[in-house]
Image (cartoon, rainbow, N blue to C red; front, side, top):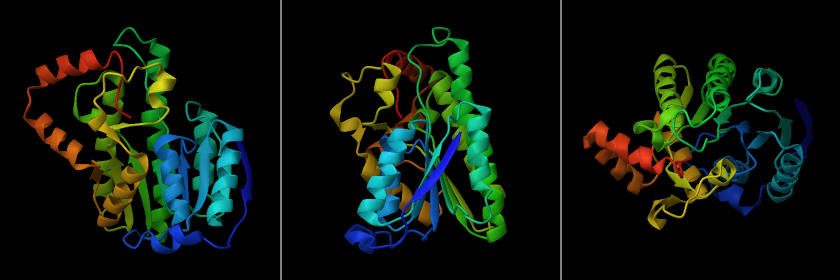
Length: 283
């Protein structure tokens, strides 16, 4: 795992940084896993625009370098590159070490890294299922713990754990792992209440990212109205974090759908999601 030099510091933040973020606690440095695409990239753009320095974490060093340079050049922020594979102990440990650095504290952690497996239970190799649990659960637990301890000592900080609306319906290993993220985050938020550390599980629906393509999942049968814009989603999520919410379901459409989910029989939900799960899954 490799930590690289920071890309610039200071300078003009640009118009976006000057006018954004009135309702969000100002953070010095934010660390984002899975930062090079999709929701992670949207968090990086929004936070850089608000003047936050960044630690960008992903597996692809060249994409990280390109992202760091672009964000620095556009917003004048300091962007640090950390290449790490969160499906490995070494990768998780590298990010834990960075989060624990007392000389360069991280005041906002976004646990965004994740992926999907195409196929129903027993169709997906067990090794792939275990890798998913490593990234979605173990990495989230370890990185949240690495960040929350120093944040509690400083009396401030925020942690966003990206889950999914799939956490609320029967969705195999993917949904189960995201349900764990939601329950863990809510429990940790309760335990840290009054410490100055805010924790929130972000539960988006379908977002146009690389998620489905990487898993080989088709998206042609997803209605257009179900797709969310990643940048708008992130703005809503940061607002919810500032309000002290522990679970964020961005967009009124998905709030309404989740209300219906609570009323529908679980057997019916299981049958419906099993059919759709063969071809796609929410991010």
